[in-house]
Length: 228
Image (cartoon, rainbow, N blue to C red):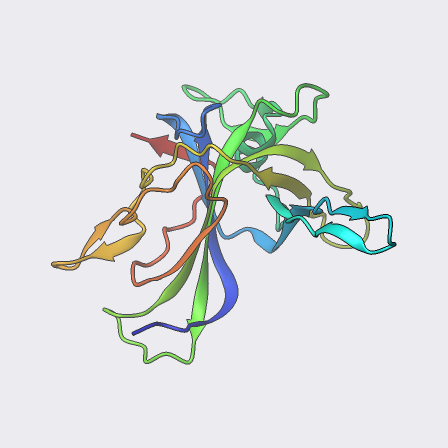
């Protein structure tokens, strides 16, 4: 038996800060959960095959090996709706601008600083709706996407005009994820059902995980929150 969902729209995304080994970082500001995005574009990349062809003296190929293309990464472009400095900081590592609130300053902006682009890592989760389903509170389905190890962020263009100012950032997946089954509950696990983590760990060569889940998406919030 298989589920063949019809996936539509995007509801919520969640960023989780990672260390250089792709392991979630426990801390007071390690998670951003938001509905503030316009689109996310995913583009799998491949290295072309290297064919080997050798022609014999009779003019006929005596070796004709086409080679095999190699999967490289998934390039991702996120177009944000509105400004969430904590999200931008988690993706790019660029510094936050803080105000003078007491006892805890709040992030009110960000700077783009020309530093190392390969020292910031994060995981990206996205929830989408599933259409044409029998909807009940207990069994409503969502499509859950996980890109467990991302880095190499780059800012895209933006325009200030008589309209909304929306930022764009690109990043790419990489191998070697330390996500495991993850730090968050993302599915309902039997018996029960009760909220739980992935049933099988993400491996070092997994760039994307997608599945149907009946656990509702997390609640969006402005700014970063803790990962215990």
